[in-house]
Image 1 (tube, rainbow, N blue to C red):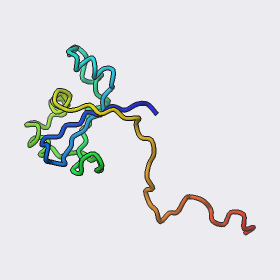
Image 2 (image 1 turned 135 degrees about the horizontal axis):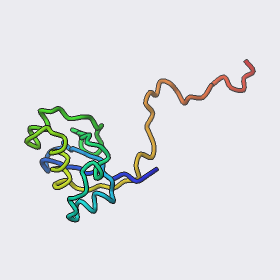
Image 3 (image 1 turned 45 degrees about the horizontal axis):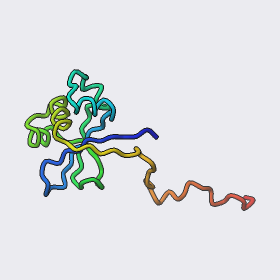
Image 4 (image 1 turned 30 degrees about the vertical axis):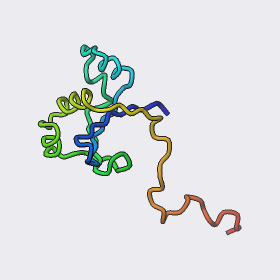
Length: 118
């Protein structure tokens, strides 16, 4: 799995609200070091902004325009992304390594009749 770099912006240190964007680590480093000639489209994976109200362990959803307006003063994705690139903190990870069981009632996806000669 390819490495994944997130930029996380937390508007208040006491709040569990976090806003996240996914970036290209190499392009982000160049952009952060002052090369603002790099198009933002090359720096970010997409202009999709994620929100979690439970901090790092919470589920990521999409914030409403009103949430973006309240926190960033705008809901324009380009402006919000640029603000997050300047003011957020970088967090690298190995990407998604595993997924949890989505529906435990479905069992382990193995046929329990296997080997019974039905």
